[in-house]
Image (cartoon, rainbow, N blue to C red; front, side, top):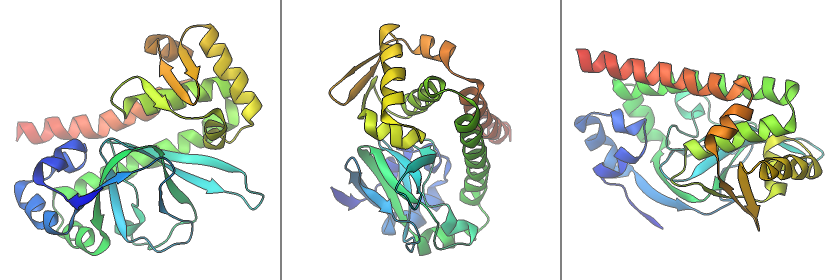
Length: 246
């Protein structure tokens, strides 16, 4: 599905929700609301970026693929963020690909329209720069987590990050796909998922993972999950309080 975006659509993404009526009015005419199927490729490594995507109900992974075909997730974005930040940071291409790991909808804004609004030095620019800092923290913490923590803890982190960005407790995802996200072997993910299921924290069946005990996952997860979420909250909740107090 592809249609023109409406002002109320902007409310479904945390970043766009902060825009003024004037900013939305300038962006809306060129903005589209798009449905992304599982595995939809938003852009390829080295490809020219044409849009910045703001997920509303989908979750998008930024993946790096090695020459031997192995992959690992660098970061993910849901209704908390945006995909394609190189367009407003001065770059036109990136050495990784972006793929919809959970199907759903997104708002996409053409490069020229977003760059023009960003250059106005208004709330869109300030919001996107704060998000860039939050994304850098996520990417950095993902690298640390993948190096230092077990597959089981990394799986807990990944499940919680996804759960925070979707409506409901069910995630449609195969263990092979999760292994690609975590940069590990499918067998390791199978063992880790089986352990979490034995503890009745999740239920896995035919490509669907259901979160049964979120608090239990939070007790199992490494500190990387909380660091990423706390930094996002610090950047955006503090900003919201500051704007309200003016």
